[in-house]
Length: 199
Ligand SMILES: CC(C)(COP(=O)(O)OP(=O)(O)OC[C@H]1O[C@@H](n2cnc3c(N)ncnc32)[C@H](O)[C@@H]1OP(=O)(O)O)[C@@H](O)C(=O)NCCC(=O)NCCS
Image 1: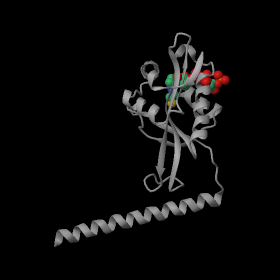
Image 2: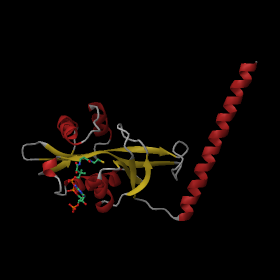
Image 3: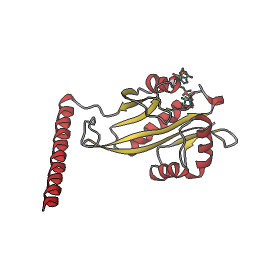
Image 4: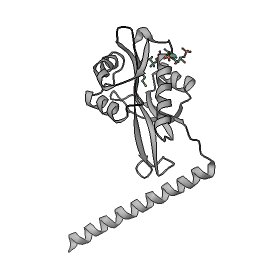
C-alpha cells in the first residue's frame, strides 16, 4: 500500500473510487481546481497495481463573519474536507484515519487555519465515529436537508487554535459591529434608491 499526495494525474482514478463509495460526486473540474489550488492537502492510497483504494480531498475556505453570522471572527481561514472514502475491501485497516491525519498536518503546516470543518450524513455511523472518536471532531450544528436526497448533515469541526474567553468575546463584538454597519449601509442604499425614484 502506498500513501502519497494526490496529483492532477490521479484525477480519473480518484473519481472512480469516489463513484464506488459515495452518492456525492463531483465534476472533474472541481477535483482539478482543488488539486491545483491547494496541492499540499489532498492524499490518496493506492494498491500495488496503482489503483486508488482511498482518498481525501480537501480545500481551504475563507469565512467572513458578516456573511456567516455564527462565526466568532470577522475573517478567518479554515480547512475543509470535501470528500473522503475507502474502497469496501480496504476498510477497517486505518486508511481513512491516516489520510485524514496527513491532510490535517499539511493544512496546519501550509496555512494559518483556525479549524477544520466537514459535513457528514446523520446516518453515516462509520464516518461519524471516525471523526468524533478517532480524530476529535465535534458537532458544530445540524444542517437540515443538507444532502441532495434531503438527509440532514452534521457540520463538524476540530478547532486548532482555541482562544481565550475574552478574545472570543471581543471578536463577537467586532462581528456584531460589522453586521450593524452593513445593515445601516444597506438601509441607506435603499433610501437613496427610493429618493432617486421619487425625483
Ligand atoms: C467512513 C470510511 C471513510 C472509513 O474508512 P476506513 O478506512 O474503514 O476507516 P478506518 O479504518 O481509518 O477507521 C478508523 C475508525 O473509524 C471508525 N469506523 C470505521 N468504520 C466503522 C464502521 N463501519 N462502524 C463503526 N465505526 C467505524 C472506528 O472508530 C475505526 O477505528 P477502529 O477500527 O479502531 O474501531 C469508509 O467506511 C468509507 O469509505 N465509507 C463510505 C464513504 C463515506 O461514508 N465517506 C465519508 C463521508 S463524510
